[in-house]
Image (cartoon, rainbow over all chains, first blue to last red; front, side, top):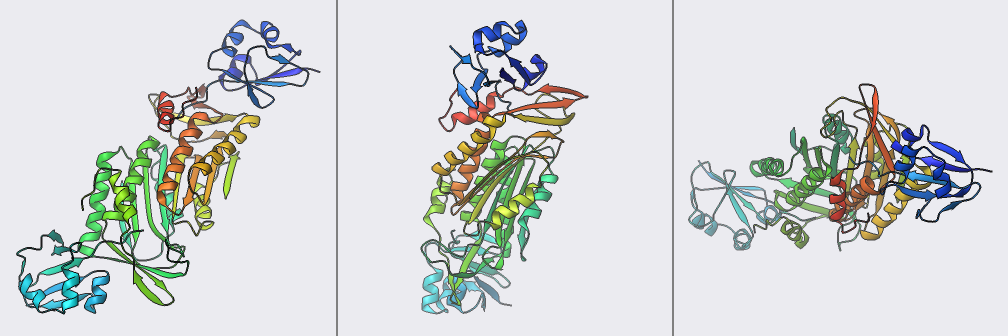
Length: 78
Length: 78
Length: 156
Length: 156
């Protein structure tokens, strides 16, 4: 079973889709398998992470099978 | 031709009507001709006066024929 | 657009708000305040049968119009509506509707808030309530003076 | 009564306000904020053809519900409504409706104002605009942080 990455807002445009299936494992390893420009955007200081619907810290994160990790860029003003 | 006094809010209840025709002349003389309890209410510190639609000071006021003098108690809260 | 009205008959506040919003498509935000007749009033029980608002024509509408101009001078608004009922009303009837439309919501909030504080405390309305068939005048509330003090404008 | 909704289709804000006011006859005051889609946006011209709001289901609605609870804990309200559109909208469409009903208008004003500041700045919505057939994401505004600072609550 795979884990899933979810990209919100402009991150979905960069990723070429709103979701991507990835093999479970440490986040650092998962990111190493993605395109460089996407990784740069996903690791921006103002991008927050939600694991299965709860905000989490980025450091040391490990995804197990079935996990959903969402990348949340800053919300829009207006 | 007469002058007219207009009573707003609870002052109309005290006066027994919303308006009263009076002979022109100094306000002090006009008031002297009214009931004592009504005069007491009309001269209360928080009652303001409007002469022909404009707020005026009470001191030295003289009504001429056709004038309308309104007695305005404090407006209601709420 | 400024729209200031004294209204003798019951009106539909929601329809008025719809028309006002449609009239201001360039405004990102519309803030409105609707005041409606309550069956109760502070410390007086919940048996209000009717409410009557008296006005004095030579002062009341000009006062509301001057307030509207004051509000427009203070905030950047696209539109301002101030409607006030007069005459006899039943619980649930709208008494007052204030709506402010602006590009930025902060202006609309401040304008509506300010307009209500000043309408309540400086406009020429006298209010009485009917309970058990008896009418009684409503006196000024100290709260209104406190509300005005927020704007640095106590005049009494 | 708390009513928090994410809405996929266009809605009639005036009807919602009417129902809300009728549902709170004990409230003397109802303050509402209606945000509607503008054809222009700051510094970007007036040629917006469409607006799209994306949300993230596991966070967006729970975030709005938590905000509603926060608001209810801060002010004495009889009712609070927070409706937010998601999906694609046209200029003139309502985006957000917040309404607060209370005995005293000060509570309703503050509650609606606070709810809007926090909805705009802390809720999980991502917005893009379509101009000349091209979609572009809308970035955060510094003004939103300034608005939050009024409440002593910058978290970032």
